[in-house]
Length: 118
Image (cartoon, rainbow, N blue to C red):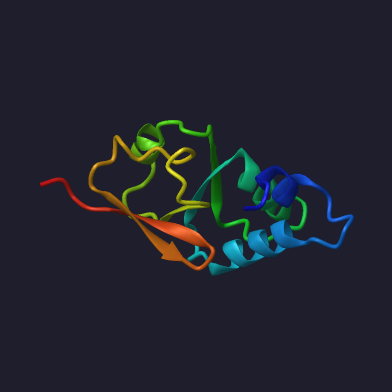
């Protein structure tokens, strides 16, 4: 298992460009004007690529705290917006208050599918 801090945040002094590849591939795969929710570790390279290199300015990258309740943030988003998660780790992306949500693989990231309540 890789150390996420070294993978995402350590400069590629040893030739490891995994975070850059992850960020570019993830942003490239997103539909126009979508939202990508990310905790700090993947958020950092994604925000760098968007802010510094100008990649995918149409995508809104929303940073959350690890384990934070994302239900409130999602409720404030437009209902017709595609929402994605940078990872599917429940320790980082707490979906417990979204009982009708499912997470589907979407390339290197995950699509958050919100089903109507019954």
